[in-house]
Length: 285
Image (cartoon, rainbow, N blue to C red; front, top):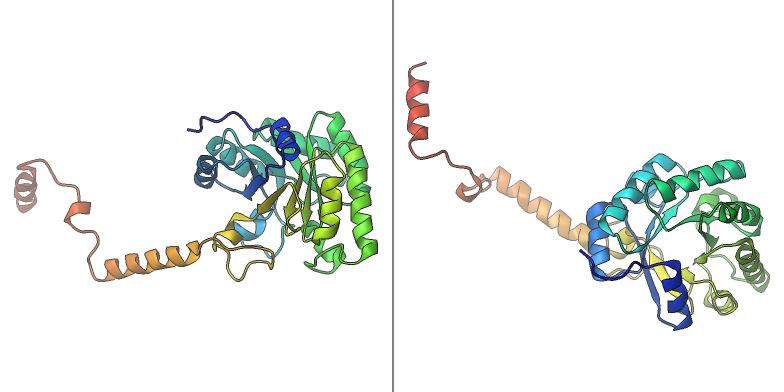
């Protein structure tokens, strides 16, 4: 069990003020949450990326509120002191403000999240304003927005020319004014990311957004080598867990086929004399 104080929004703001980088990773289950908590991670995102890395879809779009709320509740049990962010899935906050508040409220009340994350440019500001008024902290996601992948023409870095970068800076200001509690910048060059981070009191978390953000987040399966295929350009891979698991599974299959497993040390024994009684009874049947 962690002995640290609960990480709150005030903690993250203080870290930004003191220029202490904020660490953030995704998690989707209890044991991974336990590991991240024990390591001292500040923030955990229960991302809609679970649609791809857990369920095997080719985008984040099919995942549901019910599924993510269930995962978030498991992560909260594994990481009671981390700042927990629930990712709101596609179309769970777009239809109307009432539905956005209702769905976000489930992450807060049922899963114990500290805030929710929504994707969108400046046009999402009215929704963030309504959710914030309903006491729901909202982390705004700018730059590459996977839920808008069909609209933007694929998984492409955003803000690579001056005009697009200026729009990102302007959108960040609009979302801050609407009440956003933090900002995620995904696949954005370092220059606009730096402008945004230095022009706001909000914690700015980069995801492939250069070194000047207040913190950084990666998808756990990418940085641990669990994903199938190469990770995105901006990911540093810290382990080959997929390879380690494959090695273990190969060894297990070989032990089964060669009858090395289960061995005597893996087998329960009957009480003294009971095996003979059983054999006698079997012989008399």
